[in-house]
Length: 132
Image (cartoon, rainbow, N blue to C red; front, side, top):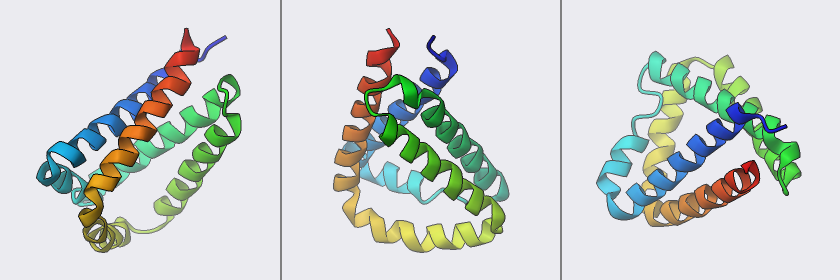
């Protein structure tokens, strides 16, 4: 039996990755503004943590149904563990890290866009292709 809630979450993650990829490639200024918005307040920090945990749960929950269970479990574990670690540090530390790390990544928006599109497409194929 297919866990529809995990499929919906994974489809949302894949859609997010595709849109991020398109934005990086075709609207880089908008993508840069979006990426610099992470951890700007306690509310955005918590929202990001909730979304990461939800995505991690979906990867772990759906892993047995895919042709790539080890990859799904690995991604799920990384998301859950890193989110747990981020929840242990004050959001200001997360913000400080993002303020330093994101500008370093911005010159690579084209590469981020291509990788994001590829990962989003692969995730859509791995989940929706098996959901039917």
